[in-house]
Length: 221
Length: 286
Image 1 (tube, each protein chain N blue to C red):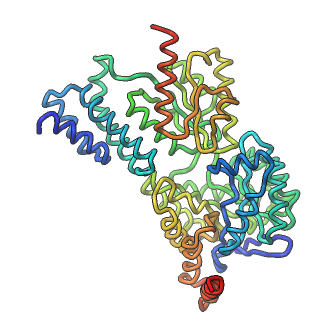
Image 2: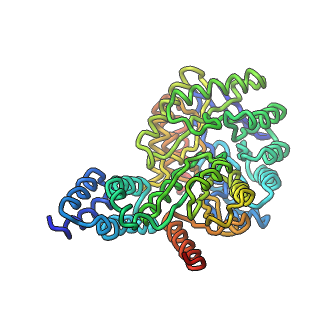
Image 3: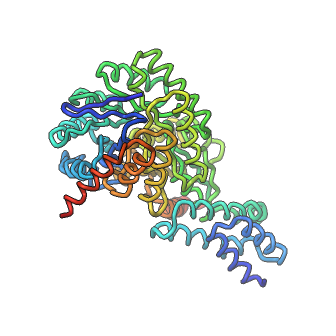
């Protein structure tokens, strides 16, 4: 296989969620001298974007998205240490968690996959994450964006509690806050004072990128 | 063991020797934007349509959830229950995670309701159980606690045991008024999810003989062909010992799947219900 064939295979197998094959192809690509960034930007990320697009259209289903995410993660484990040297490893850090009182995580995990696919470094705190845990994790990881997930109308009020905890800790302006989950609406996101809302994983990724770019445009490094 | 719920004029018995109890899940604004908007504006007309659609195919009970963000859920739930009682005599499953809403719902309900739900979390149990006892209602108890959803059947059964100790032991609510939710999760996110649920159901049936219900549509979340999956799940879960589900009662294939399981599993002697449903459908078609 030449380089183009490997990249095409990498794209196809990521889309198909074939993790062992994706891992083999990634290793083969490195042996053949393909740049890690080339594999990332010309095969892996486009594959995940296609997964997201198909999911959004209703052509892809939850298990397909999950296995594509796993396949991508298999490649990233190999490629990421190499990317760190080039400075192209991440476009930003995203801290994620399901709010306290809520144990739902499928949607959140799908968002993780799409964010990773888009080049974010994702730190997922899991489910039942207390406001103080978010605050501590923000201090530790200094993320660009924080995502709160809630699946129940009764746990959605935790968005506000979390945002108030960030205000109290004096870090509200340091991070972009995104909220999401089945019962959440744009209106609700506005009421609780979030910076953004998205109805699905692909849109969440777009919003995160967009808000991050807007913020960086305002505060040049 | 028999769990009995009733409206003013109708009694429904849940039990392993009874027809599988179909609790219609539809009256719930989650994921129904237009319905949520209407409820927030105080327009409950869709509720009546939902009632009629579920009654048509033979639901035994109706779940009522008014979880609309930024709305007065207690008032909505009380209003909805009063409205539903004017349109059907099916018993109601009062569904909220807000204690005040459950209280408001129970106070207007005429009969013996099924309350949905508590988990094995102290604070919730202390708030909800006295209310359940005072109203003489039955209660759905989820087999999870503050630490999240247990990944093994053994842990879920252990929580069930704790729930029995608290609900019956401490609060002296009759054990037959406990309906356990063994937790159904989507097989789309975990290939073992349904097997764990089935193992939990068999163990609880064997050790406690309690009645059980669960979200019958959860298993197919994120997958195509949901009705076929739901119907197959409910049939195997019924065999494992599940006695009820909060499910899509508007889809013939799912409802018929439950009735077929009743017949196949010896809970519909001489196919009486199965044949009656067939005749009804024939009469409706002609």
